Image 1 (tube, helix red, strand yellow):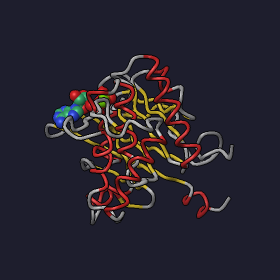
Image 2 (cartoon, rainbow, N blue to C red):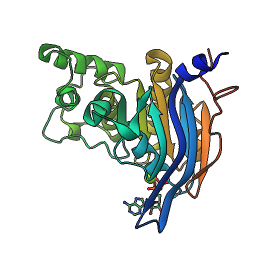
Image 3 (cartoon, rainbow, N blue to C red):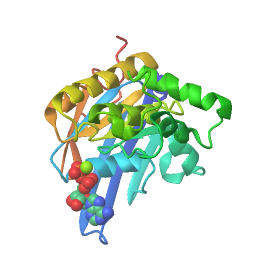
Image 4 (cartoon, rainbow, N blue to C red):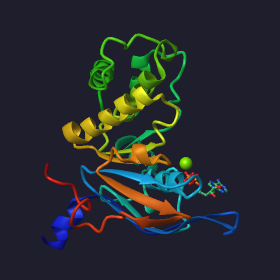
Amino acid sequence: MSEVTVRSALAIEVHGLEKTYDDGLIRALDGVDLMVGAEEFAAITGHSGCGKSTLLHLIAALDTPTKGSIRVSGHDVVHLHHASRFRREEVGLVFQLHNLLPRLSVRENVEIAMSGSRRPHRQRAPYADELLEEVGLGGLSDRLPTQLSGGERQRVAIARALANDPPVLLADEPTGSLDSASVDVVLALFRRLRRERQTTIVLVTHDEAVAGAADRIVHMVDGRVISGDGDGAGAGGLRSTT
Ligand SMILES: Nc1ncnc2c1ncn2[C@@H]1O[C@H](COP(=O)(O)OP(=O)(O)O)[C@@H](O)[C@H]1O
Ligand SMILES: [Mg+2]
């Protein structure tokens, strides 16, 4: 396989990534290398405080690194010219808490994520309904978030993350507040999105059992990746063809 082919199959490339806080006293990330293949579902796991959220936030361009490089779908995330457009179109974000707006309907919560996108206004509500159908919430669009279960609310948050069809979905402890039945539903949904939408997924979790739902597990300790970083070749490094 040529160098060019290998590169085009990578969704995320992180090299020598460092992030320090408090004038270098806290080294949240201490030289992270990570590659995630296009259409791969990778989990990043490790104990609380090992740097998982910091890494995910940097990949999502929510913060800037102290040192190192990040490419997402070919974009140089450290030197973005249009950071808000990158965050809107290239990555979908899901967090532990769904952060739905309580006074808006489920449909409106998804629709609002399309603000500023190229999708014509008249198509936004129907597309929100389509996305809700896709995450298994067809027919619930007119409800308020309070009228849904915790697992259903998190699926609304996933539909919202898909609002602009990002090639990459980044999830930080997305199952952290869910009961075990809802955890299974959400993890099955991630697997289906990878398969059917060809979405690249990076899921951060401190829970090894949750990480087991992914195709590959990346282990972190003290701001470093200790295994599963993906060398861009072989099992797990690039997407499998199955
Ligand atoms: N804004 C911040 N200021 C100072 N220290 C921080 C900040 N954010 C994270 N940290 C520290 O960086 C380390 C990694 O944090 P984090 O990425 O949140 O870990 P994880 O998500 O794996 O639990 C921890 O020691 C944490 O206390
Ligand atoms: Mg965290």
